[in-house]
Image (tube, rainbow, N blue to C red; front, side, top):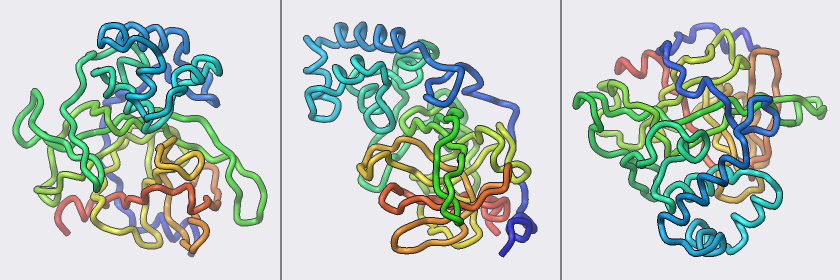
Amino acid sequence: MTNGALIAGKSPHLSTGFFPHDRAVYARDNSRMVEVSDFFDRVDRRREEKGFDSDRALSLAVNGKPDLIRDAKRNQRLPKGDNLAALAKALDTTVDWLMHGTLSEVPSEVAFADSGLRWQGFPGGRRNETLPVLGTAHGGTVIHTDVDGEDADVEQTLFEPTQVVRYVVRPPALNGVQEAYAVYIQGESMDPRYRPGDMAVVDPRKPPQIGDDVIVQMSSNGDDEISCILIKTLARRSATFVELLQYNPPLRFRVDVRRVRRLHRIMTQSDLLGG
């Protein structure tokens, strides 16, 4: 199946003019970076306010390992994925405030479940505005292997699963589906299928099929920490790899299945309307 054939027949997804992360973010491959010193200044401030007497005590509360904060400061690297979310939770604040010092220090109301995140309540909005839009930011590029065995630059997206940037109206097809969520598209690698600022909605209950657009939650080293997501088209699956497509520039590439933590299908417009 060609890229063009996969594009044909797909309806565009809900788009919006709201760009919640159109500002400086931390990423090794992104020239617009969070100041690491400012990040750790905010961490130190909240650590003292919450009564942690040392970085070691805070690290143990985050992931049970004593050197997380010490090593991050020494290497001038921010915690990623699940560690970043757990750090915000331990400090009783939000990922956005730690990263940028903006929005509220008070965390959104989220609850964890074995099957993933579940969001509760109707914070500050109408009762039908219950679908959470989770935090994303452009994450630069990362090297993956294309189908010819050559290294290729692949656009990735930073993902902040405990940061709810807003709630939007829940489509009727998702009534009662607490695990459903949405993200804003960052970057142009899926243009013309998706453009920056378009919204992708996920129902984690439905397994993806070949040809579906997907959100691939990735870990760095095969552990449970989510380091980034890939928003691509599923082209092939095997016991050892997942093969994906992007469209701008056209690229067919593979990721090691050991790095894939979750593979979620993006709903089509027909799905959202109950078709």
